Image (cartoon, rainbow, N blue to C red; front, side, top):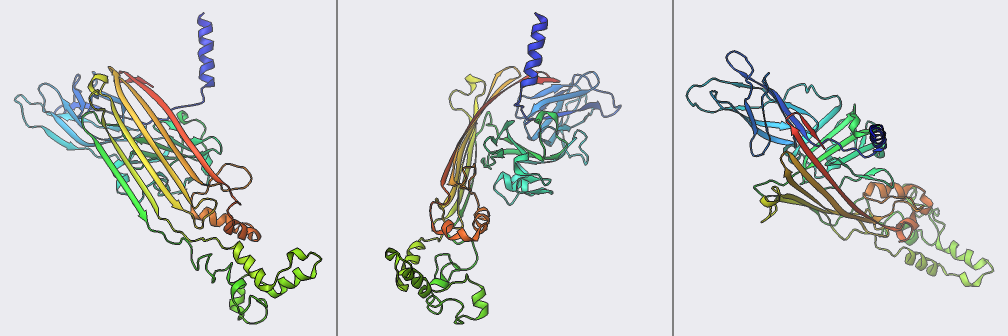
Length: 466
């Protein structure tokens, strides 16, 4: 029987292919007597505003595991010693924050000693090339998206890390992968106001993250507080305006229209000399509507006979589509969290954090749809289900709508002006059909839904499992 259980356990370990990325950190240090340097066994450490804490062992060493990323205040107390408080203790994803305490013997109760923590120049427990941004850092950056934060790092272009393609970068939110399984692309458009910390790794990945080639983006979102509510909001609005240089594609002066409507050349052609050489080189060469009409009259099919004026009117009808931008770009991002009303205390300090993001980016020219839309809602529910036990349920529901970026049935969707401009210029002979027609690329909609749960049990100050 024992042999069978062992075999089953090994098989389970070998077949697990979904791994949780770490989204918490650790606080550790040594508590000693400031006068003689002796360790103070039994000294207490408390993370203020939380239920987390620890007691120092016989060697004065303490450790607090499974600490969500953020900035905290630590307080150390022991009978016969002055209380010491350390503020501005920053905890980051997957890292150990070292805070040592030196307590002053005090026979009579004295004043509390306050110390401001400082980050070490060298982080000893980092085996990877990485950067961590907490909520305060993110708020000071001139960007409003996860992709923009990542793009600020050296060696990163967009979501491409160290020259690798985007599909070689792992993107995790609260330990859950956000990869689109159709094309292996990461989905990063989560609420910016909900982010607690972003960790960017560009090399030396730990085994817990599986097979990663280019880089890792690990995001931890905020958790609702037990005793207070939090609201955050970011809005961005850009009025309708063109996203290209020069004339509108619908203008009679545009590259695609002028040779066919300018009376100096449209009837007899652009090579007649009516235009100077500089102007002629700026536009497509055209033989003139008179020549087009003659060709229709010379064949044996009377149904296609056109006068020069009729041929021009047919061209204008085919290019009648208005390609100007008439709607604004916008981005609405908001979040709200705190204890669940009325039932929070009865259900293990049940708390929530909800976020919503809705963004529209108008295309450089309208395609089968005139814009890219992306909206999603995310809900994170947390409860302390027992002593040292925490249950977290995280769900996301959203939709992307726009125009498919290929006509071969592959997954993909245009999300920016650059991608459209690149696709339009790829094959100039078809550019008219791509711009003035509506059906070259089809409309595309992507529905997104994810649901995950994580149970954490801290057995003792040095041991926990998820």
